[in-house]
Amino acid sequence: QVQLVESGGGLVQPGGSLRLSCAASGSIFSIYAMGWSRQAPGKQRELVATITSTGSTHYPDSVKGRFTISRDNAKNTVYLQMNDLKPEDTAVYYCSADITIAARTVPLDYWGQGTQVTVSS
Image 1 (tube, rainbow, N blue to C red):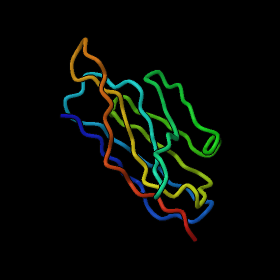
Image 2 (image 1 turned 90 degrees about the horizontal axis):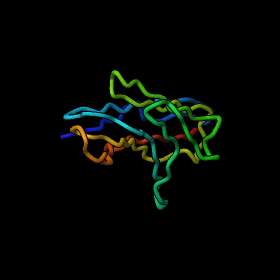
Image 3 (image 1 turned 120 degrees about the vertical axis):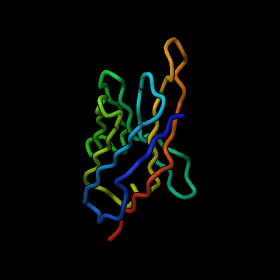
Image 4 (image 1 turned 135 degrees about the vertical axis):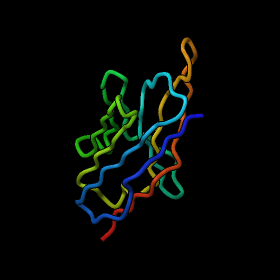
């Protein structure tokens, strides 16, 4: 069994910062790409950051220059540093990871339960 648990969400004023964390635990053999997505009420889930096992990152234009994804492979943890937050960043943020639980198996996509980020004055 593999679990991803997010933390660090909350209420922040426009222009403020938050740092999200997501720790993977359980029967993990290897973790490949990790990422963060978000879903605002009435909108589709949107990918906001990805990071490969070697540290290559990708961001959509909506968050580029404001959000930074990083990972600590020793801790099986991925982070999302969010700066200059805007009201339109308000959403539930989910982490995800491609994980294998044994050698020579296909990675499966695991998701956390989500953490609420609200940007409001």
